[in-house]
Structure formats: C-alpha cells, structure tokens
Length: 435
Image (cartoon, rainbow, N blue to C red; front, side, top):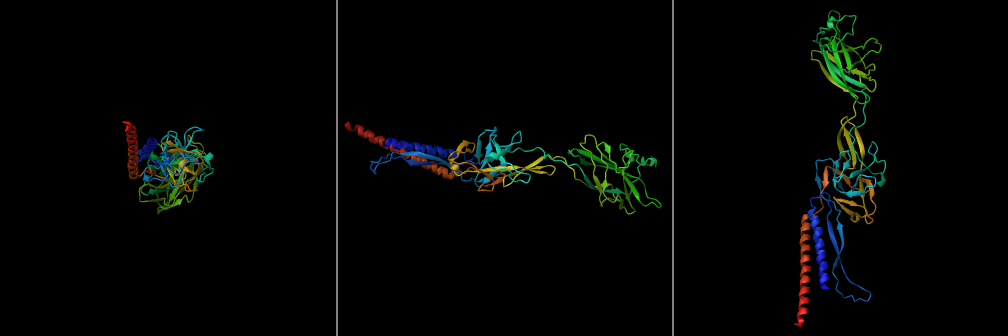
C-alpha cells in the first residue's frame, strides 16, 4: 500500500513542479496571474473504522490563480492600458454570438477598420456615451466595440473675418492704374501686376468645409496734394474665381471696398463692419457671405506693406489627431480643427469570485458558474479600478519565491522516491526470507 501512497506523493510533486515552471515561464507575460497548487490528504473511512489508521496519500485539490495586481510598467503608447485596482477589460471577437472574454492585458491597437482590438483581434468593449462623456446605457447588453472616426464630421462656413493691414505711405499709384479713365472707376485686371500695389491670400470655408482661397488686391488711388489730405486705397477681393462685391447696389460689376486714411495715417473709413454681398465660387455648396472688419491696427505709415492679423471663424471637418483615455475610461478623439469627440467609456467587469474564472490563454478568462455573473461598471466606480493610459500590468510572479518553491517541490519528489525505494527494500527482504 505504501507504494501507492508514495506514488500519489510523486504525482503531487510533479504537478507542483509543472505549476511552478509555468509561473516562471510566464514571468514576462503581460498581466499574467501566477497559480499555486492546493493538495488534500486521502483517508479511507467508514462508520466502523478505528480512528488510528494511516492515510492513503495525497490528491490535487485545486490549482488556483492569484489575481493580485502586478506592477505597472510605463509605456509610450496611449493605447497601452492598465487597470489600477480590481476589474477586467472586456473583449469580444467578431460576430454577434462571439464569446466574451475578460483580460487584464491592456495592450490594444487599431485594426484596418479602425477598431480597437487586443493582440488576438478581439474588440475592446465600451459603454455608449453622449457628447459630454456621460454613459447613456449600462449593463452587459449595452456594450459595443469602439471605432475611431477619420474626421470630426463637423464643419462651419466663414461668417466673420477680422483683419488688420499696414499700408506704406511711400507707395505710388500703379502705372497701369493712371491710364484708367475716371469714368471707369472699377477697371481692374487681377492678371496685370501693374494694376495693383499688393495682394494677400488667405483661406475661407463654405458650409461643407471646403476651403477656398481669398485673394485681396490693394490699389493706391491717389497721392495727397493741395487741399486733398486723405489717401484712398481700394480692395478687390476674390473668393476662388469670383469677385466679392462690397456694395449690393452695384449692378454691372462687383464693387471694391474703399479704405480712406487721413494725413496722420489713421483709417477714417470704413468705420464699422461691412457685410459682403453673397457669392458662389465654383464648387461651393452654398453662397458665401460674411461680415468683414478692418481692425483698429489698420493704418498707413512709413512701413512696408504687411497683413498684421487675420482671423476667420470657418473651418473644415477635422482629421483625427490624437486619442486620449482618462482614468475613468473615457476615450476622447481630438481632431485637427480643435474638435473633440467622446467615443465611449471602457467597460470594467468585476466578479464575486475571480478565482472561479476559466482560463482561455493569452491572459484571458471566461465566466463560469463558480465565478458568478460579471458586474459591468465604469472605471473608478462601484469598486472598479482606474484606467492608466501609457502603462501595462506586469506578471505578478515573484521569481525568488518561485525558485524557493521549486526547490521544495524537488525535495518532495525526492523524498517520495526514497519512500518507494524503502518500501521496495522491505518487500525484497520479506520475499527473500524463505531462502
């Protein structure tokens, strides 16, 4: 009988060695949870059995994973996530009936369809939110994958323009301009550089967010002499291929804007905001019309021509610039036009008995009857841990502790082998008594 008792000890020691070896092998695996073995003694008992009997060996009672948190290692990727505290990320493979898995491994990336996925291609699950980041639906049935948008989806037509320009007092009237007749005050050729002094090009937007160049040509109309102390400049503005009119009553051709400066170089006209006539450049989704203001910094003096400032309130749909993830799990997309968009909150699942989870490999687990149903919540609420972006959880394996346990398991194996050897010696002695 002692052979079988020692044999159970050998098997137990071998199992212990296997579990310890697995712990050591996965010391570098992200979010790996170490296991330990639990053994129980075997005793044959019956109602009439004496209390003073020997046991019959040992048996494996359980291999339990230890869900203590591992250390957090810094990472330079915003999509490397770690849960500081209790809980698991929730992932789901493609397909409506795909299995839901739970993991502490937060090494996520973006697939070709712009979904956030783990290393095996399963989708990270989030709870839906409104524009302010408030969760709009909760529970296991509300979870969904998160897809990164390419653009913000919003654009705005230019409605207001604020600019300031400095004009040189030493500028001459353009040579081609002096040949124009006084009866043709609007004569102007944008393709003839001799018909204007300076030009500036900026950008405006239509309602679809399409950008159009806005080019303004500035022309000095006169040089003060005698009783004339004011200086007039005219501004011809083109949006794309069409010229703006600053006078809705002009019927034959677009009317330019006249800017007047006194002898000190101070702008005396226009004195307020100018509303331009509507214009539809080629390809525009709707007519463009805006309010134009030449700011107080607009002046004339002994300085070179300069556009000192330009501000307009239109913008195109922004391109995705950055993804950030807060400690509450809120995923926020930032776009090139300054827009931000809440994409959802990362789901954190907790279990009454996490040791009852079934291992799936790749640092993943699935729920079982022993683990209980998952409790779905947001990060940093209802006992769930917080999300750390730019960090990964390390394995919770203490290599020194495992090596000591390895020596102990090896000694246990050797001791049971010695017990078998002793039993064999005794059996051999008894068999040899007849001789």
